[in-house]
Amino acid sequence: MRAPIKFGTDGWRAIIAEDFTFDNVDRVAQATADYWDANPVSDSKKKVVVGYDRRFLSDQFGQRVAEILSGNGFKVLLADQPVPTPSVSFAVKREKAAGGVMVTASHNPPAFNGYKVKAWFGGSAEPALCQGIEALLDKSGPKARRLSEAIKDKQVTVKDLRPAHFAAVKRLVDFKLIAKSKRRFAHDALFGVGAGCFTELLAGTTCKVTTLNAQHDPLFGGINPEPIPKNYAKSAAFLKKHPHDLCLVTDGDADRIGGMDGRGNPLSTHQLICLLLHHFIVNRKAQGRVVKAITTTSMVDKMCEAYGLQLVETGVGFKYIAAEMMKGDVLLGFEESGGIGFPGHIPERDGILAGLMLLELLATERLSVNKLIARLEREFGPHRYARIDAHFPLEKRNALMEFCQSNPPTKLLR
Image (cartoon, rainbow, N blue to C red):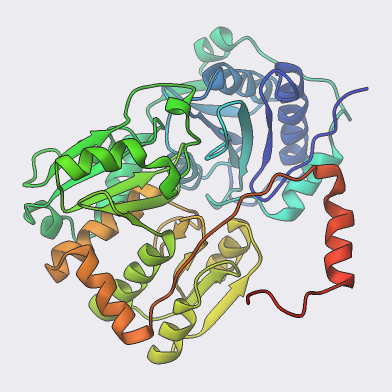
């Protein structure tokens, strides 16, 4: 019996060689092709963008997805190297493609890999799309073209997806201000695809960039590539000896942002979110709705109330935030994990753009990140955040949820 394949908040993830196998990738890719064949999007081409991260076999899984999609008559734009997820999402929108596939397990442990589906608008696939793919699993057998033949026939084009994305994010910030700011900052890539991005973006400027944990290591140096403090130890030790103005941290596929101050003290994703919200409201004079996942800090609520902004709260999963962004009039959209979406871009998390926006904030305010946070806390009160990750069998999840709904706690904190 074949293993069941279920899409979670952002695609399908499984353990490599256990459930994430070439056979199962074939099944999902074929179902994806069948769905897009049966549900063409107006003004979109029969074309799909495919990217992959630095995980074990990600490049080969990505190439296999390209073979299946091309075997179903789709033109495929295939990344020539590991790329950030937002680079794939941006290419989907730019190419007017039917959608995109990113082979990545994002911030999950090294044993995992994953399959993210991007919709035609360059954002996370809607629940209906994911459910549609699940419903078509095994309805038809995999149809594939040998990659070398598809490339020769120009049905598959292999290309660097990053330059167009990088050019776009530079246009969305005050790049001249950043370029002359003479800031010295570090970037911890957590061994992911963000490695070298900021060095490349800021080449030739007055900014000095120190890239940490940049080597290609499918084991991620023994950590999970997630921008949370417990994964910062090595970089924090470096910063204590070699102070910088700020340290940006991107996750494994560079769609989320985290950080530390210049001396290695961790900054929560909630603090970074509030700093950017302040920057957009006060410095950029932006207007619009603010969209946050339910797990995001209540300081956002207080800021929206103070500035007379409408706040929209969503469930967990950036696809819900993306749906609000698609409606328009969104100032910022964000989630607790450090995923931030920006107006005028793609309805998608972008850790590269988020990092540049934080540099723009520092260049604008000319204050340290700690002073900026202290100012927010004086105005809206101190807010603290902690998270406990508890492993729980997936097959028991529904029973637990039903129990919690039937027996709601009367008190959460003592």
